[in-house]
Length: 155
Image 1: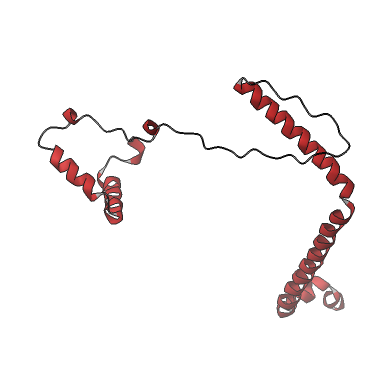
Image 2: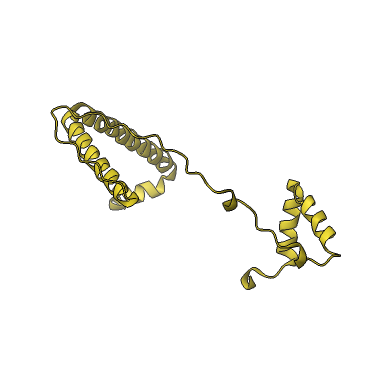
């Protein structure tokens, strides 16, 4: 009997209320310690990373030049000569992207020729299309298609 009372596992199982107090406190304490170590680690690279930033900037510049050269080759332009190493690297200015003009035909909605509709259904179809300008009617049409249309597996 004395050995059972000294066993910590059975003592904790006999006192579950204490377990509900100690466990959340231990989790909170561990989270606080981890948060403090993350903050310290975040401060360290900012202080000691000045030399690494120069190397990273140089590497970034080289990669950007390589990408620009490949783009120029694909467009059929003469690739720009890579900049020679200088004592002070110049900041790389990015060209402002120009919007690509899209032909209006790309956005046009394909409508069937008027001859494909029978004469009796053309006014009815036009009336249905006019009803779809309202948001609630669009929802209603979608629901009706789901309910009355073919099953999803057969579409």
